[in-house]
Image (tube, rainbow, N blue to C red):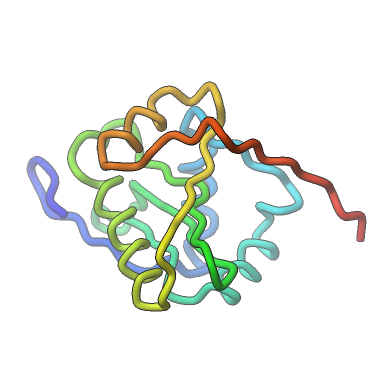
Length: 147
């Protein structure tokens, strides 16, 4: 992964990246965070349940891209794929997706879904540009489980 004027690295995300990742997600349009499921505790549980699947892109020590990835044993799922505005269209998002898909492939997962808000046009265009198919035959339903 290269950037104009410098080199970036991608590595597995850790819970110590949480504050920077949340700051990135909050600054990107089309990313919907919820205080309960996106808390540091909940993200820590997600990462522990899905080791080696989620990644960050770094320029120096600054996170400029991030993706959460997990699976249920049959399908993979991408959440919160985001790249800082000034680093878009340089291969950062594609590299993060490729790393997540490679990690899923190593676990025997053969299909992955990405969650995109209906009005996130840029994300839909990006997904299609890297070979993903927009599904019109599915809707997601959700229910909050009260603890």
